[in-house]
Image (cartoon, rainbow, N blue to C red):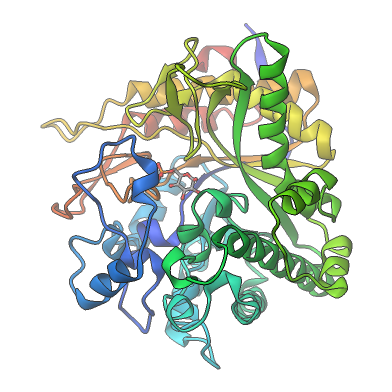
Length: 492
Ligand code: BG6
């Protein structure tokens, strides 16, 4: 029987984000965030991701006027804010040694521009991190995960505004100073490339608020502001907390050529290069020439100072973090080809792969290809911060969830990961399953798109008892982690 050797100190974990689990949207001084304006739309198909991500000023005003929480998935989340001690106890029992979450900006600076942080917000995260410490679990913290104070959208120009960038840096420095004893791995911005695909949830950008501007230019300016903020945060951590590490995090969607027509290979390379632009900037310290050419060809004018570019140049990330769920194909001419979705990315359907109900194609080998690509490109340690399957689960009358499909997904991906470490020589810090308990979906605000190892009794309309049930995948992960450094082939 073949065994897999797990590298010493490898971090096995699970991941979530504040806005998808915490709830308590208006408790203990938390301000309203952009996530609190998102609701599930039953009239949209599971595959209509673009519509789910659109936001208008009118919709924001409607959301503000409605003070209830039931219909607004991210306002109630799964009540982690109150139930975290029990959730962590259950998750700790799987054997994990790391837990990734985000700190909600709107819990610490409710309006974003407040002079002082909200003490109750800081206390919540102190309590949460102490709870993790009890079980020897180290937190990995994202500072911006699809949740910013709504005030910064309504009274400023969201991430387009350099003042907002500075408020974010202030928030970051506040929590880094506060939690540096507990947190050694920081990720300034979740999936930093996502601003191009969904500028609302990533950067609070609403097109109708920029009537006299080219909205694409607004997005690219906000992107630049996020790079500058990340570099400033990286510098702050390196200057003050030398034992801590900072990651660049991208959405990694492997893109294959649809067939062996060289023009399709070229197209797939171009799409991949576009997504690597983001990690290139954060790991190599400069805008790639191809991106500069694109910006010029689009006629976009970015406000960038020499000082900002110097900051980006001198303060590069320590590790490459990424989410990986699926892959797509692409072609130079997609006319007549069947289209499908990856993590919010549209591509050409790959007939060799299975597809989830949300149109995401399942591709474990693509994970290995991604590891090779990223490692060869940057020669820096990699960290898989999200990998998992969003699926409909059924709770049996005995309180069980037989999610064999999720176990199958995890088995195949983790096997590729361990093979890649062993055979390809890839350096990987850790691996986190998305997610902890079930949680509200980022893209569709649904509960029925379940990722967790623990089932939560709650539906898309906010009905349910919030009771937790351990899924079969929970027990499988526990079994995997019980092997320690040597994982036997037969677990897969
Ligand atoms: C990642 C996000 O893009 O994908 C998470 O960082 C998100 O926040 C995850 O939940 C899965 O996406 P979704 O839309 O299915 O929840």
